[in-house]
Length: 413
Picture 1 (cartoon, rainbow, N blue to C red):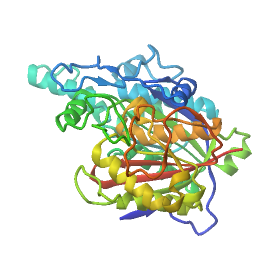
Picture 2 (picture 1 turned 90 degrees about the vertical axis):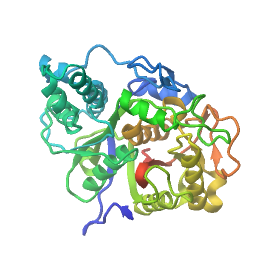
Picture 3 (picture 1 turned 135 degrees about the horizontal axis):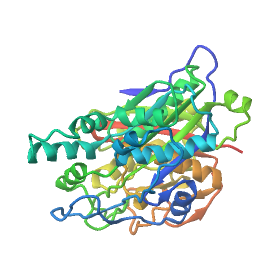
Picture 4 (picture 1 turned 60 degrees about the horizontal axis):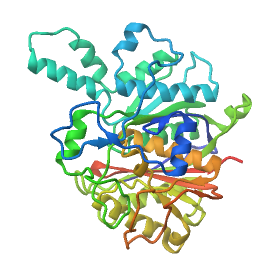
């Protein structure tokens, strides 16, 4: 099953990014993260958010959050009820809105991707319900804020945004799907601007689940390495302020980059395993390039999904090899999950923003943990910090259940 951004009856409108916000284990904000990704710094540490003493893996890319959320319209009571995931989202949104210089009370759509929503609140609810079933104090707010639409509503209330809120939960493609959906709305004249991105926080249930599947690496995340042994988890959020080019020019906004293509496909192969030949991944990459009007030979850099698991990297390798053909050896590819881990529903949004950083500042983020490249790889793996002239980038996000999404971005000169 294939999806590509639909064509409208009139000429499609160009979609640009005028604001960007990011929080990961590398830090809070563009500067800290750009410095970390550019140099290939890794941000893994022992997990302190919850008890991992009985897990086989005990490290993750855990973010350090500031004490205060800057400049918001929430009451003290509202802010107290916001969980860690919601705070990650608010921090990223604050930076994006500030950079875009949007006014408050704007009626703009909010489109977000996540897999876990307020999972930590669900865990708190469960512990109290099991440990003390007759104690109901605080349980109702936990139920309300556990639901993933609540983080989007909190964002809208915090910054007085009045547009519709859409939440996309499509496994690890969620963040890329959210940006792709927002791109389609703008491209086809449904709105002039949109706030979009993805977020997910570390939680004990999700961490233990991946560990029980033995999907977590007991050593370190090494995407596309011949001896890779699993993924590492992280947390974070990235938010983008999108506008049509006409709208951005009319208000004199600074443009960071252009989104010019989106494609998505589902392979329906297995609940957790990708199609071994990467069939749907190939379709999503091809569709994104078709919408963007570019060929594989015009793509300078790919931010790969690259989880570091045996099956995912093999499927993505096959897909990129097939898609790129004779162009494969010249295309630079890296996985930034080697630095910040797998951010699940936030991954696609964060990795899209990394592409914006790379296009704007002209560097390639390395897969710094790579030791021995998988011999099936035909493309050029970036292993160390590198300055480069790149004009067009593609980012892949693939998830459980065969969800695949790709975005194409161009440098704004």
